[in-house]
Image (cartoon, rainbow, N blue to C red; front, side, top):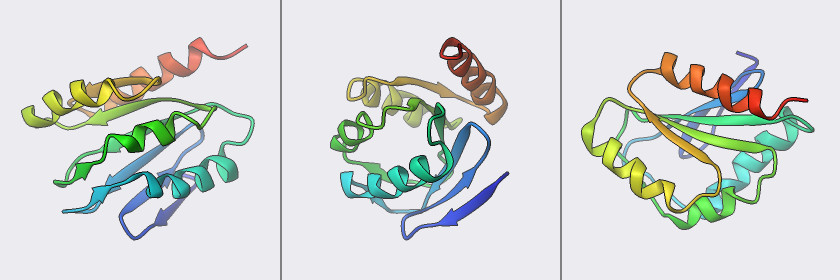
Length: 125
């Protein structure tokens, strides 16, 4: 891990080519929260592709419009959702409709990281 951030609504761990985010319990993620993601993207991933991994260990809601804002981050290639919860698996299928980025659901962080590597490999020169 390179560094981490504690925002009002989440914690974010920054790695070389991905970010792992854990949203706080009971939060509703809204488009305004993307400003923090933009800050992280500009600071740590300037001129470099990355993947956003959300480790869904808490219960929270997402305003689908949030994905429209994240679609504007050009070097963000995709979202990995990590949760063994069946409800989250179904939810991720709905969320996929709102993004033009790759989005996959995984039961384990290991599987998400394997997928992340494949996504990034497709975009290397």
